[in-house]
Image (cartoon, rainbow, N blue to C red; front, side, top):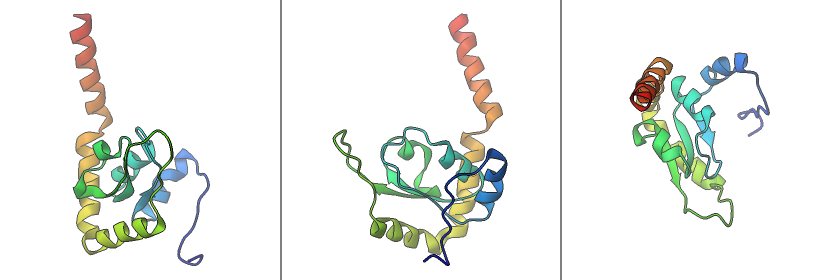
Length: 130
């Protein structure tokens, strides 16, 4: 496993794009993550996402862009996917990895484009300020 997996504890914003491009799938097992930027950046880089199906992830990652591992909602404990669940989700993606990678990129372009985000918020502010 040590020859196949590289753990990167931290990286700079300048290193992020190259780091994403050097990989095939993003694993994001954090429970109840509300809006993880790392997931949006991965999708924009064409990386399918395997993640806990909790927090904001069901809104960020459609089924066409990855695999979400079901998780119950509780505030009493953190529920992290097991290694077996993560492995099963990765195995489910592998036969359609190219298709899911393309879908991830297209979803990011359609949903998270900065220009569109600014336009949508400007319209809200214009409406509120009247």
